[in-house]
Amino acid sequence: MGRSYYNGGVSFPVRAITLDLDDTLWPFAPIGVRIEQALHDWMLQFSPRTAEQFPIETMRALNRRVIDENPQLGHDMSELRRMTLRHALQHSGSDPDLCHPAYDAFFAARNQVECYVDSIEALQRIAARLPVAALTNGNADLEMIGLSEHFVFNLAAREHGAAKPDPGIFHAACERLGVDRAQVLHVGDHVEMDVAGAMRAGLRGCWINREGHAWAHQDLQPDLEFDTLTALADWLDATQSPASEHSAA
Image (cartoon, rainbow, N blue to C red; front, top):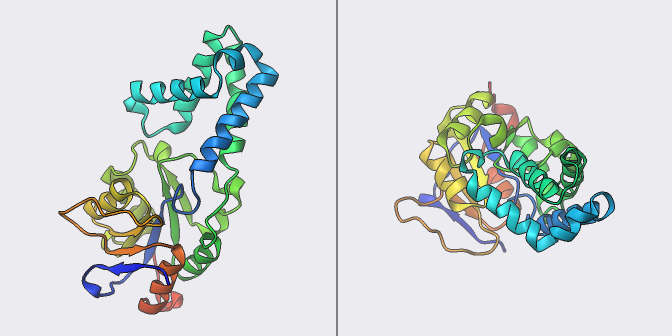
């Protein structure tokens, strides 16, 4: 049986869901490995000098450095990746215009995801009951992945101009949903960026804690904690009105 926690042991009304993607619907670690290998293979074919000077470990360090040196772009992982590729190509004496097809290779690998075993069925159940909006700091493409039909929209940090846990991105999602913040449940894996960030922005917070980590904040507790999305779907079935009774504007 999955572990569960309800703050105060009581239910509350939920009229819409905002849902994190990476490490909530699917694990990101295997995607990261796939990205690095795909980019290296692409460079070997189209820019061997870059592949030689920037093997996987060196390219990884470069990307980390670009991220650290450009905090103003922390909401735009796509641009940070392009900056990494342009630097590697230019530094190795290759054509910087190769950045565009190299990024395409990255993006294809980035959107090859393997969902957690419970994710798709649980997402289908949740989306049949309530409007679900994706709310992500990453650059996953739900159309490419094949899950867009379950979401009313995908609000990415790049589109909004600020990343979670900035309250503005949560507020913007609620406005697009047409639902009061207190009746929107944000669901995600990250203690600070997802759950604490959402709750401080006035939303309800659900922690998907698949690894059994300890909660890191003493000043607040998640409204809900589950180790699978299935457990969340079960909670919604048990505590919420039928979908026909919800009427998000």
